[in-house]
Length: 220
Ligand code: SAH
Image 1 (cartoon, helix red, strand yellow):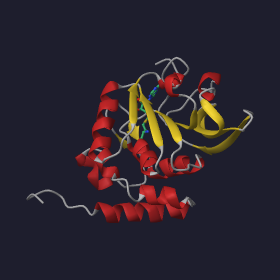
Image 2 (cartoon, helix red, strand yellow):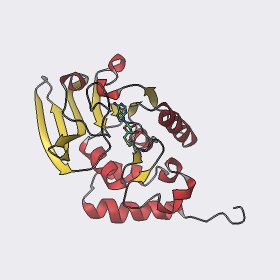
Image 3 (cartoon, protein in one colour):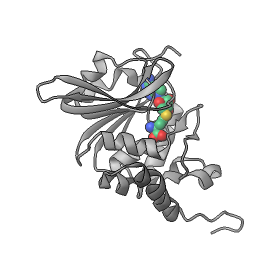
Image 4 (tube, helix red, strand yellow):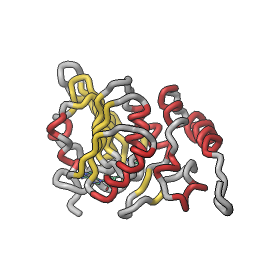
């Protein structure tokens, strides 16, 4: 420890986050709780924000984007009903935190980000923490067709509506979780595809995400 460097007990901060923000609000998937208790979230925010790295709100990263609130990451991850080895597409890599949680859970992760500088930041963060994730700079509103289908898809920015194209990249038996506009608000939706390819859409809680900007999203 260098002189003047603030001292944080990140392990303790993480344990508190899991206890008071996740368990207390009904996150019950023990694998999700363990993963969020393990991934060093502070490595995905700027050192100046380390004191807030495990607090109950989103934080600013580069390019006017955010790292999502821990509870929302946990909730969406739980809604995916993951098993180790699942092939997962994420749309909106940002700083890479959600990707790290998915990788920690043993998933094969593909993540698309439209800002090159954020994708590069995520690559650095993920490497530092020892996670291996497939990253691509592209318009994720079109998915990542070359590696489709995916057993799970998670969108971490808000779509104006869900489009066929993306749902087409979801495998039979797959689950997609995405924030979708509802009037002036946003609602988390779960899209389930049955073994025979039938689609069911379920509404979850209201959320606040940055917009999905792209061909099948908002025009910037
Ligand atoms: N998953 C991140 C949250 C990132 S915020 C986390 O773990 O904290 C949402 C991200 O979606 C932003 O980085 C934004 O640039 C990105 N985004 C918006 N539209 C996109 C698009 N069409 N394709 C890929 N990424 C997009």
